[in-house]
Amino acid sequence: RLLIRCREGPSELNVLLDKLPEQFLTEYHDREDEIPGIFALMDPLPGAIDSFIQLSERFDTYILSRAPWGNPSAWSDRLLWVKKHLGNHATKRLILTHHKNLNQGDYLIDDRTKNGAAQFPGEHIHFLSTQFPDWKAVMAYFVKNRNLTKNCPPGQPSDLLP
Image (cartoon, rainbow, N blue to C red):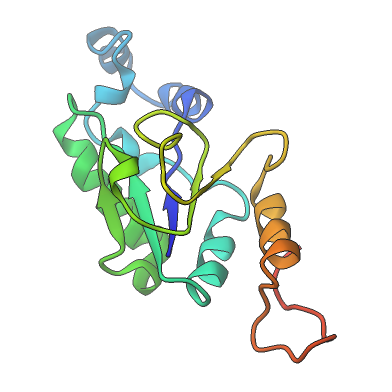
């Protein structure tokens, strides 16, 4: 089983904040992740959608995400985002939790070590780290280290990235 965290971070929030009315910025100062609807507005990272689709063809793949406790719309925003960007590839594959270590799987792709990611019982692929700076690096890792190919005979090239 492969668990992939929906990523949001300060840089993504800053891009979105530039697009929001001043009223929201004043009302939610220092609590930007509590702005209603903000998580539905985020764009996927380059390579994320294609990587998820390719990985989901080979793994029992789930999206593991944390929604801010102080933003009730964030919970539904996550679902709307997954439906919009991943469609049928992720139907009923979203898990919202603040305790990632309570989930079982072989791999967790996550850009943080918080919320139980560091205690995850499988292998934590630390996304956006030096070793895994982007989705291309993650996919190269799976191709090289996990012999991940799409029904290719031995010695034949994989159809996976990179």
